[in-house]
Length: 418
Image (cartoon, rainbow, N blue to C red; front, top):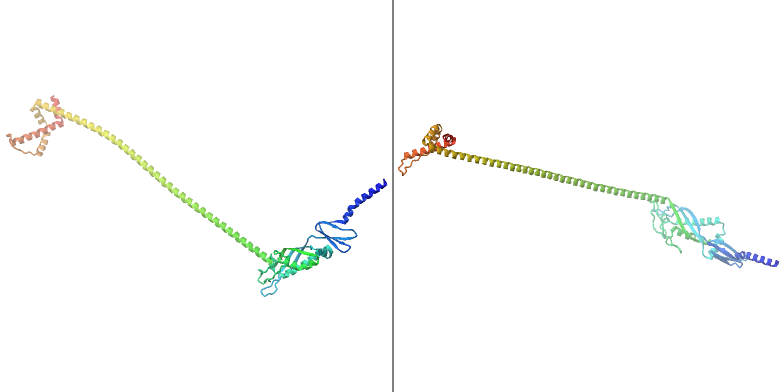
């Protein structure tokens, strides 16, 4: 039992120490880490994470360095290479805030150099070393560029800047080198070219430069000028929009005024048409009233005419009746006179002649005066004096009969006689 216990303890100890032994031979290399393992004969093996590195305690020496990029903030203040019209230096003070990105080289040689020269320094010294190196390269780049080239976006840049009258830019050719992109900034190109050898000596490479701010009095003046121009343009646009809005409002008011004037004109025309229609209606009513009056008058005239006609007819009929009665009476009177004369003979006739002598004498005289007596001897043996006497007697008899009939004397007498 004791032997089994010892064997079990040994096995447990071996199983417990086995992970430690394996981990001492195979070590983890994390991502962003480079593991350098040196052997006794002086050879060095480099392991890039993530992965495992083979190491034997007491026979190898290992160290780890970071393969992550290093971000260095730069605050550079210096003067540009601008000149005036007489080619005299007229530098412009600028301040550049930028961030540079560097990293460990990819080759084993550069990794060894970085481990021995850069990462062997304390961490504070590492950052200050990069800051000084990049800042000095940045100042050299600023001294080689003009003010406008610092604001350019591409390389190479070859133009004159729009500077104040006292400043004329220097035409500078920035020649690209191997590995340069067309979109690189001239400042980044020069800094990369200037510091590439120093960074290589440290086992590092320059990746990129991000310019955050380029500040200068000229840039500020231009910014203010641009802001003023933008504000002026905005004011102009606003004024134009206001003017257009005012013109549109005036045009709308003019259109409304025209429409109102047309409406008033239409109302006036309609009022005139209504007045004309009313006048025509009144005229028609007047004509209708006149026609009705005329019709009434015509009807009244017809009624009056009918009445007059009836009255005239009645009067005519009355006159006819009267005439018939007079004629009848006259005929009756003549008949009675004739009868009286027939019955009484000459005595009655003479009596009436004597009674009516006062009335008959003037009439007989007048009748004899107007009569034209022409005596013509007849063939019967009657003489002219006899004819005259007979004519006069005939006239007297006629007048006497007429007077007797007119006055009704014979009628009265005849009545009395009868």
